[in-house]
Picture 1 (cartoon, rainbow, N blue to C red):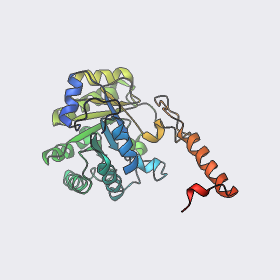
Picture 2: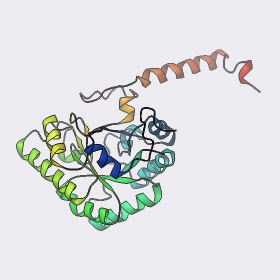
Picture 3: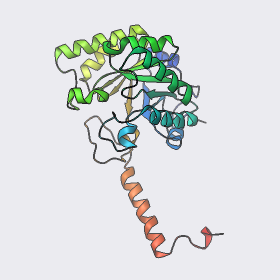
Picture 4: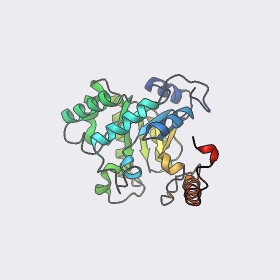
Length: 272
């Protein structure tokens, strides 16, 4: 039964996330990209599982999120959705699937929902994509928004530095947050922005605000490979490592190689 640290094992819905914000209960969100990992994440009590386009980096080895395709995201999301019993499963719409126009965005959104079994979608951007967001919502698909450092726009930014430090960009972010809230989004991820601005956004809009490198909010999200310490090269200030799987896995695999080469594996009890 899911719920390692969670007493309420009911399925998480967008309505329940709103209740959590109203009751002051924090929301835990992590990424997952495969069936086995998603089973573990769900059973441990995570509220939202994001099938992130960060799969482009951690699963495929790309330098940015831009190369991952719609078909690839559908594959990952379908695998995750099959595993999950409690968490809300959110799938990123990859770059190029919703920026052209609203009609194409809705078509791709419907395809993801039909072919994956996930619960909701996440889109990056504010006023620039608001018409597409509205159209997807009108199609009956829940939308989580994403502001601040939006990795799909990395070529425009030219850097992964903290966003919205300047007054004009901070004002636009707050305006975009209000717009997305009013449009009907059920949640908002804010990435790598000043903590004071995160608090201002969370106190201004009605929907839950999930932070990543944004300080305290209604909830937090991390990339699972980062927080489990599988990747030793990524060390941003906001990342807390909860394990060192890089060392654990390297040692385990090294021991396996040693045992195979020495003839110790398989022993008499490990054969038919």
